[in-house]
Length: 276
Image (tube, rainbow, N blue to C red; front, side, top):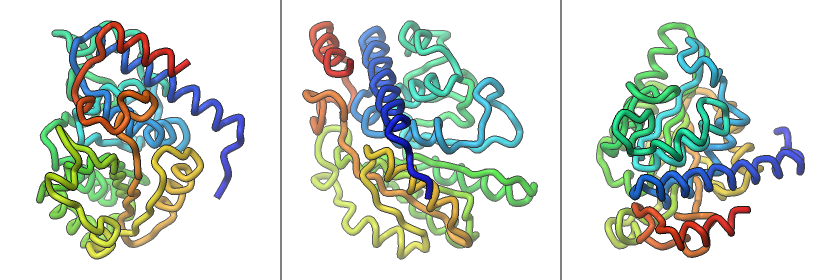
């Protein structure tokens, strides 16, 4: 596997700071939104969009593109910010219009609004089923397309996820890659206090998946994980990414309060100082 250069890691680190600043400013302007899950997914979404995807940001409906589905749709601000880094649209438009009527950037992703968003999401548990359908269609059409699906850990309490996991293994969908954002906090408390996920690695393996477990904020581990997943044949892959909710802003990290709360003026100023 090719190693990221120190220069490239530095560029990705800078991109992560810019994207987090975009999210914070947009949420403050909107007065609502979800910083915690937007920040926990930031590094692996950046590697996906800036290093791995077969896509054309200036041609978002390009027929041969890989597809990404954000099943945990409440983390849309973080997704928008990463797509802006990739060149889909200007970051300043996100800041100015997030969650406003007629905006291309709603609080949850809408395929009818936003370039590069192929399905609307927000109702948890459904993204992997869509990824499976896209992967099956690609096989039937003879396309070399990969389908990526980002799943929240709280979302894994939904039964449909596991039905989809069985289906992907049954159909040997090696062009499906799920990424579990395992930040261990859901709406208002620790996931283990709501319904424990137990041996998560063992569960996916038992369901017939190739399992890769990484630090979800380490660029090299993320890059290697996507390469390993793409090389697996005959079964789908899941990357279990250990992450920190609110990663990047110290007073937001590991605090369920920031699952869905916009920073006020003082909090915004403090947070932006940490992201210079």
